[in-house]
Length: 240
Image 1: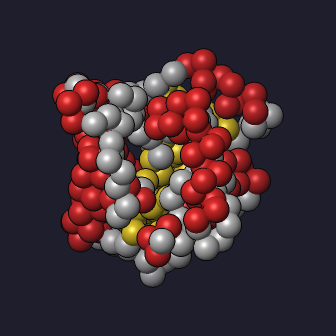
Image 2: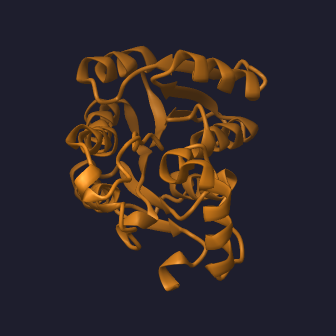
Image 3: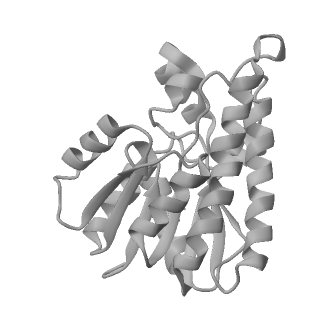
C-alpha cells in the first residue's frame, strides 16, 4: 500500500475507520468520505490527523456529489465502500416503512453504482473497487429481509462490474457479526448480549472486530488475481 491513494467511503467509524488506519500505517494516502462532517472530524482526530489523510463530505446516493468528489480527488488506486444506511430497516414486515428499505437500497446499490461509474475512470488498470456485503445474505434473521436482499444484490453487481470494468478488479467482502456502531440499529441496547450469544455459537469463539474486516479488504486490494469474488469473513457463521 506504500504510495497508493485509497478512497474509503464510510471510513469515519467501524470497519472503514480500521481500514483507513491500516492503509495509513502501510504508507498510503487516504481519503475518508462520509455524510457527516462531525464524524469525519472525529475520525481525523482518532487517526492523529496525519498529513496523508484527507476527508470529504459526500452523500454517495447523490450523483452530482459523487461526480464532484472524483473531480476533486483525481487519479487514485483503490476505492472501498463500507457505507450502509440500515436505520429502521431491521423490522418485521408489518412495521417496516418503505422509506427505510429504500435507504438501504440507495446506500448499498445506487451508491456503489455511482462510485463505480465515476470512480472507475480515475483508477489505474491495476486498481480495485471493494464493496461490503454481509452475512445477512446467507443467514438472514426474521427482521432482516431487506438487508438480506440488498446484500445478495450487491454481490451480483460485483460480478457484473468485474466483467464490465476489467482489468480493474471489483470484489466484495462479506462480514459476519462485527462489533461496530451499526449494531445499535440492529439490536439497540441488547447489542452486547446479542454479539456475545453469537460468539458462543461461532467456531472461532468470538464476534468479529473491525480490524478483521480491514485485513480482508487489504487482501482484496493487494491480490492482483482476485476479481468478481465475495470474500467471507464471518468466523464460520455460514456453518452453524
